[in-house]
Image (tube, rainbow, N blue to C red):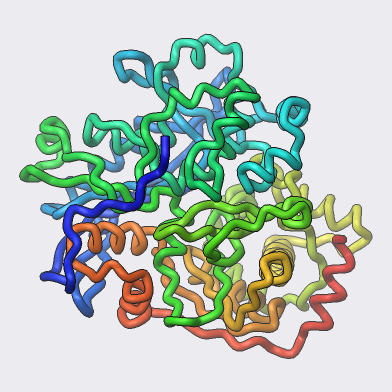
Length: 495
């Protein structure tokens, strides 16, 4: 099938009156329903409901509690009150399998489950890694959907499946009864050609992946359906309520809300459980050098490409906090700020940190193995993590510019990590560039903005959307301190 250009319910010459939109934004550690009030010169977010997203380990492995997530979504829509539209975004790569009746065949597998260990090598035996990258532009991470499907081959569950829905598409299906596959999230499966923005049919055929499992591709801005009568009854909303396809990969929504000025040359870092650091481009970079550097070409709104690298992100700190009994973060960050800089660093992109459990011990082991001082206690471990993340941000931003031939003058940090002043300052120091931090709820903002322009509330121009974010949302600017030689020395310890 050929991807079609975005369609919108209206195509106004100018923006119309304000509207109210609900963003269902599901992250790897929490979900939220956020209400956006949007109009010319107006962009206000209100959190209606937040709920935990906790994976569950059962006999067969690590699974998502997707029914619990859906219940949280319904609770959030009930708390949101009457809205003009709903949009859903979430993390990438994971999926649910449905039978011929549309019933879910078991809880979706968590991307941190061990089932994909060693599977990539099996896939590469059929489609070598270089060919796979040249066709799809997606970096290697062991849990890409293509590897998950290879791991599921031969299972009764996959054999019984009539359709496959990525997580935001699954939630949207339960809300509307209509199935589709949103493009920005589909691009993370390693089954999309970023040049055609359509399925990589040759790759799928060679790997035995049945693309017929996926419903038709949808573009951000297309109609997804209306809330079903039973959903209206459960949430107390008056119908009809539209459900709009947004950039359903949360990073794609977050990048759409980067408050960059018109013509500004910028890099972005979307921080949360993961750090996604890179550039917004007009075309993919599919060179062998790009593959060797493990950069990915995921799709964004309006024909853009998100050229970025996945970094382990604040997952490192989240896991340590869990091991330490969830201490208050603010005092810990103040103590970490007093620790000497760059005393110990680890490779924040090391897949050895992917699995949950024993994170403080694993960080200590990595420091010991590289001959660095072992962090002593939570404050030193926290400083090690933040220094290491800033160092990883530096590497990604510098290498992306070089590989894409796309220099930048400023780094935008959006997402939850934008609230971490120490991490933002360290990133400015490491990159030697100003950092503009905020907004923290960038994914929800991008979700709301796509809905608003689809329904005629805002001009469709992407620059106008970003200017509205800059004009209405709080951001902080961090200037780099003259410490580049220290960061260069620290880099040598882990490369």
